[in-house]
Amino acid sequence: MFCSQARELFEQIVSSLDSDSICGLEHSQIESKLLENEYELLRRLLQTKIF
Image (cartoon, rainbow, N blue to C red; front, side, top):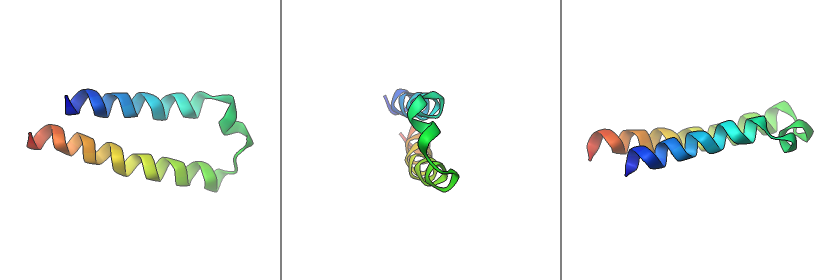
């Protein structure tokens, strides 16, 4: 279950980076969004190892 949640979030991150909406953002804004998602992704991946 946790692994699929991590994979789903990863796919969402990749999809958002590939979307047209990212083109209007500045580099720092993209970086901030990635950092937010990165921490959540790492948390979910860690849960796959704990449970």
